[in-house]
Image (tube, rainbow, N blue to C red; front, side, top):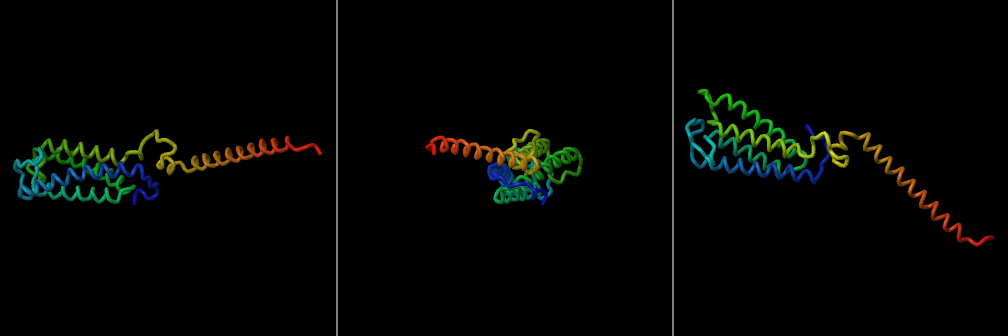
Length: 187
């Protein structure tokens, strides 16, 4: 997989799961509502569901992608993050492709401008949820993704803490032995 070398962080996993679940739910509802209207598979008429133009193919596709996002939510971890990012990019690409197809005779998913805008918004949201805590120039040093990308600095920090800890132990021993040595009766 693309992210096997990355750490699994449970706090960040909640964000990936929530993002996948929320957007998956929206797509599932849209797909189900579109399918209940019994619109033709590649009908390019003006059949709207929840303010978006739809047909049978778009409804099935929305349902399948929503179900996939739910699977990502259930699995969580880095899988949900990567799934969110990949689907986010695909939604944005879909928006551009379908924007080019709006006025053409070939518009198999019956997209209108509101569908294109929805595709862009969902794509950006999925990318945000997928990249949250993973991609930034200013990740804190305790972030698991920063630590995975900077193993030598992490090791140096660990060694520094170990050396500082050893110095503290030696200082404590010196103070303790000095106190005990000062209270000994002269012999």
